[in-house]
Length: 234
Image (tube, rainbow, N blue to C red; front, top):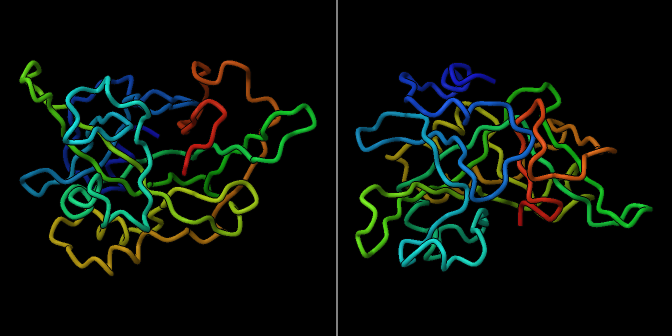
């Protein structure tokens, strides 16, 4: 899907001059890579921006000290964790994608986990609920802050439960997108009501027989999310 189509669905009036490579079809996007997010800026306008997939804590002295990318945020504890609670109130975002991959824990006959592609049955785009943050090194060595984000996860629905015990939070209506991106919305129960499993009958779960050996570099026709054969959404 081209940027103008995402912008239309998200009701974004002006497209920023993001690098064209961010909108190129990618079969795989791994944590720490740049992705596109929709957020509301300080003027209250919706916009598309680039962000590092993997939240950088505000208290981190450097990116190098982050041993494992923090690319997920559990919806059940989002408003309680020091890492996420401020972003949950003031810096919510949406991550557009065509679908995502997940690996079934049960081994295949050859001893490998079974990859699955999960997408909407009608092939419409997915919009994952997320949170974002801006980080700058404390030593002031870098003038520009780094924008980073995490995708919310929730318990699986009936379609995902046989594959994994978590799934991304998919905002599946215009009203849920509006509410999640609304900076004026501070009603925690109303927001928590959004971060639930999407109805299972909206998803197509497709086993992938020949995924390819080089999962991190393989390019393909769709934009998906992957962590090189491990679980993606914890």
